[in-house]
Image 1 (cartoon, rainbow, N blue to C red):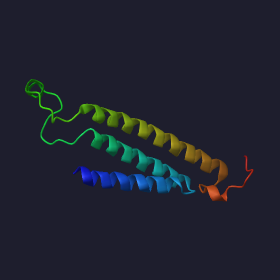
Image 2: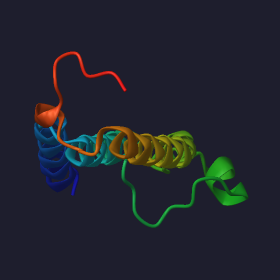
Image 3: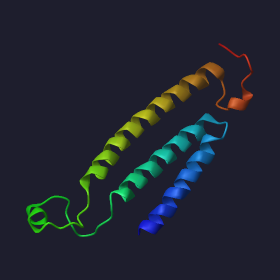
Image 4: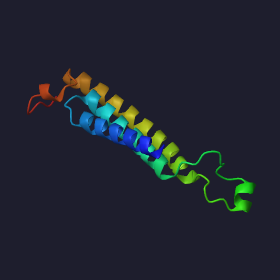
Length: 116
């Protein structure tokens, strides 16, 4: 399972970097979103994948089971999802304002000293 997730993480990361290198602002935002998702999956995978065991319960603590899933990466991912959503909303508002001012979303169509 972890091998499949490693390939998915690599694919998402490569697609995110590719989209970041494009000249369109929409593709830039999509690239940032893909990078955010790939990093979330990386943190999730680094936390360990164990089936059938709860994170914290009295039986796990008493038995001293070491193969329980660590809840800290899951909490970090939840925080990262909220932060990623806020950044995406900010970028969408910024893109909308940029389109209103310049009339284009393609960075190649801008002039060198264009200040409006």
